[in-house]
Amino acid sequence: MTGWLQRALFPPVCVGCSSLVTEPGTLCPSCWGRLRFLERPWCPVMGTPFSLDLGYAILSAEAIASPPPFARARSAVVYEGVARGLVQALKFRDRTDLAPWMARWMLRAGAELTPECDLVVPVPLHRARFLSRRFNQSAELARAVARGAGLSYAPEALIRKRRTRQQVGLGAREREANVRGAFHVPDAALPHVKSRRILLVDDVYTTGATVAAAARILKRAGAGQVDVLTFARVLPGDFRAEDQGPI
Image 1 (cartoon, rainbow, N blue to C red):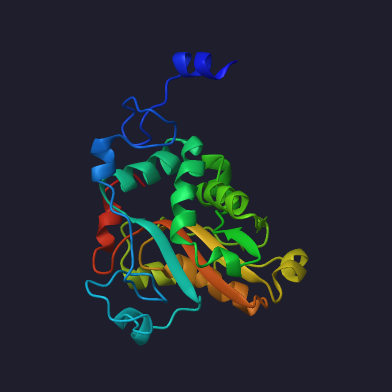
Image 2 (cartoon, rainbow, N blue to C red; image 1 turned 60 degrees about the vertical axis):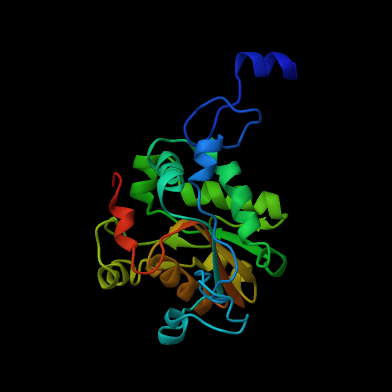
């Protein structure tokens, strides 16, 4: 099918609201104005934004009080409005076609991470949840990120050995307890993880409990460094915003 005929039969629509747009994978002006990108200045460890530029070496109170097991975390957008809608469409309405477009924004946010990483690993689903959902939204994003960055993709490097409760609706401590001991690096994956610089990918960073638990296991398996890249970020003190959607 030629390009003009394809565009005539299947015109590009906004990935946020399905209004007609000029190019596929873009947002209409209304949705674009309601998307909040995370930009510098931010904490060099947590990636949370500062209201003032305090210098690159200044850490957030969160990073100082509770240093994470990963080296750096970055997210593309704030988890609200249009961004929340994109995550929920990917996760709950089988809109896997959104993953490559979302990954483009993630690559922009993780521009300082990808050149220093060797391997892209998605946060895994438990086998039972994967069978019921039929796909892992984090793996869809991770695959697109790996392709865009020219990095190796390793979906089997990390497994979720224990089925956990949905994190939505849980408090910060409940989330930590829920994912404690849930992840495992299979013996077959150990040579691929050892001494490698890993980019751990998930859809939303809320309290960080899930990616922290996953990063901790990867480090115990010998990973040289673990960085985290997510599409959206719930800003500190506002993690209940994730509850505004289906579970």
